[in-house]
Length: 440
Image (cartoon, rainbow, N blue to C red; front, side, top):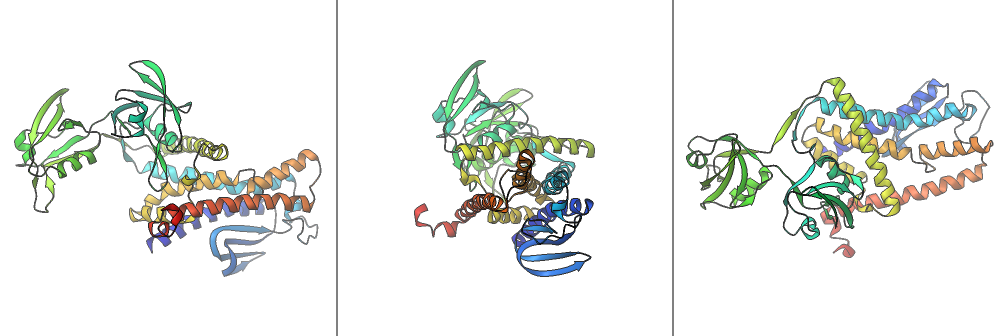
């Protein structure tokens, strides 16, 4: 139920904002709006106010604003309140306002999220210096080493870990050239990121040059008896380098009753301690330390949050456009695309962590929706704008038959995209995938 409610909320808000953009701009220019509908198909609920019928329809995968005289085949009276009676500049404003509203919503939602403040990994805005290579990973096979600095992926600069993750994630299961600095000497290696997780995210198997820290030590615990203190940095356990707190927890859980050699950095000096994990009252294997990743506190002002939101959305827009181009030229796998089922799953998962947790997902989807609708594909807003622009250049309106052919091509492309993303969504549901023999 949470998943359905969250999905309805996310999709309802995004569609409403998009169609509201068209609606308000149409009314601004004096265009008579006949229908404002959330959803397609049969109308479940409807009410009429003035000239406009407001409705909620049966198929909740979009919405529409129907304007008087919107299509050439519509019955037209020549009245000034019809869409096609307006100038091309006015029609352009009406068409583009839907995507613009989605882009604006993405900025607002991201700003709200940023204003909440957060603990973020300290390494995310640092150069991509490799601290650890996972055994058997694509990075190990490519010959990468701890201490190497990755400066570019497929020719695209990656000055930070945050940028690196976004860039490498879209290049799963294909050879990718990496620009690397090794002991100050530039070199290039080729690696093949492995597709991981249900969204087939590219992963090399490199970890940052950081270590987890001891945040607290329980009085009387094995850790306190061994001499550990809050603030100690855990460099290694039994000689294996530790990067994240989860690795420490996993190593300790598997060492009940066995001495664990901890390499600790304290005041810049490395020391070695031996701790034997025990079971606590809840049958958990513990040493008596609380471990946390190295993070920094981030709490911007409202103005700073808006500025950062704009910057991030511009950056994400560039990545989205590159991903779309990658789909066209075959550099990005279509398996990474997500459709309504995937959105519903993520919505439910995010809502379980609190409704405010939905905002980052909504911002991302709203940004994607706004950019997708600006694509020059007939049927989409961008396609209508393209056709109108071509008519302006040609100094004549295209025939109804010519436009119908253009829209048919756009419809076929859109349906192919929908089939692809829904298929991807279904393959991420384990019991449905088991019914697909070609995937077993």
